[in-house]
Image 1 (tube, rainbow, N blue to C red):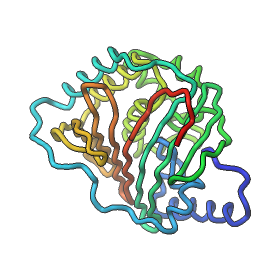
Image 2 (image 1 turned 90 degrees about the horizontal axis):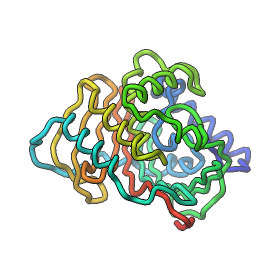
Image 3 (image 1 turned 45 degrees about the vertical axis):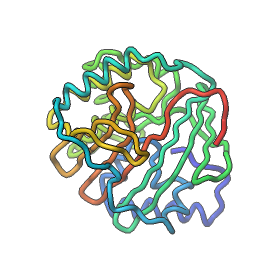
Length: 281
């Protein structure tokens, strides 16, 4: 987890309290940090949000039409289009803009964050319309680890090999092995996360193909995300930990992600994830 420096005593104690609240609310979070995005519930940017913001009760997904294709068919179509994408494949900074909200019992909040990362791991971020700040970072957040850009370029382009790599990461994360009851959710979560990272078109396609092979995957039909963009809404899992996403199969892009666990939920919208040559909030 990257944390803005320096932290004063109040911020340090408050971060510790937030971690305690989250761990008490959902014991899986301590050992299975949500690998998505920025683990916002314990970031400095989340401190102010957690003390004052309120999570919207609705998912933000608008009503859509009944599905005409299976989830697997939608994901395979997204894979083909992602592999054929002609969007800029390089730049100075990898820019990700997400809007997140979470509700873990005692801890509720939201975070509008932009992040710019160079290939050497140097990172700048802006939270909730605040100033752009350089962060301490050792790389890109992937699954439950911080990895460098070289590791991202070396990811397998075969969906089975990609899943095997994720399962290996599940057992060797920075926080230790993922609890057995969270294995399926971790693999799904991590694969979805790849869609927001600066991976090759072939790896992006492999991620969609890996998701297409998962059991308990459902196409919920056309839907509108919280930014008003139209895509296909998909659901993964039938147990206590479930994921829903909205993707644009035509561009092979992830638009929105929701996670529901036994003790709470988080929601996120991917406003943008792309290469850029400027840092501009």
